[in-house]
Length: 384
Image (cartoon, rainbow, N blue to C red; front, side, top):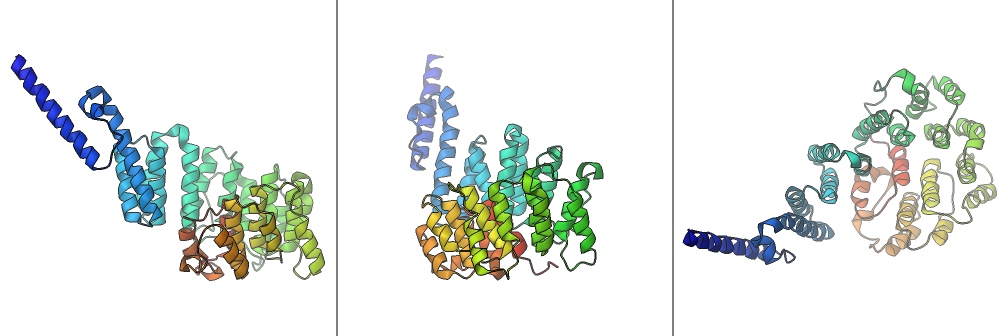
């Protein structure tokens, strides 16, 4: 009996020591010999392996080696399913590399397994699809998330409205008229243009709506501006001034000016927008609305005001400068962000937004506001 126990103990030591040596050879230096030998400590091994694969993935991503990064992250998630960060990063890379079915599977699995983290997972999912311009799926997600919120979380109306003109989403029957009647009128304005025969009626219906909160008031004038009717957007703004902050009112006043107004007035209105103590959200909104409006704007004024550490606002400014043809300013901003302006990756033009932005978004922190604004100004060839 004693001999058998000694043999079993020896075999256990040899086996677990060999296991430890293999793990060490794979680079898992933080796994201790005692973690392998002592069974109660085995629970420490999978988390360590997960961190090891996560580190391998980070190295691969830095080198632009997506297949290796996917393999490492898949291993990290397999050995340690508690690593939400590994799974979310894996789903995002799957989205970027157009492995959409696999990306959707991971997001769905995470939402079911981590219901308390569902809101965060949905936002990451949203950002992944927005970054890859998979706008039809983003439209579906926005409807679903809005429905799940009991039609109360109006933040989901922004992606819903901005993707409303995508092919295949000209009509929606996802929600009951009682729950969404007012916003369906806004969606009609989002889908339409001033060239439609019924545009006057659409404007009339839209302007009849009572906007219960600032976000919806903001969305109304923006959608009318995107449709191409500055006068209607100005009318909506005049109705909702009491709902909007001083910053949003000044921004809308500038955006809805007719392009043929005095250059001095245009420049004065632009300069009046910037608050005394601006935040990144202010700069992001200015860039997004400048993209939508197309009115002349002093981008150098923004460059002077944006602090060097505000990388998201600088990335947004780079997009705006590049698309407006202010190449010299765009190159300076890109260099400040630590990238090489001549790199073909950054050859962003109005005609290649949907193919360029997904890859650029992986390395430049382009904010959501800017990405939303890129949707209507980057009409796909199949769009009407």
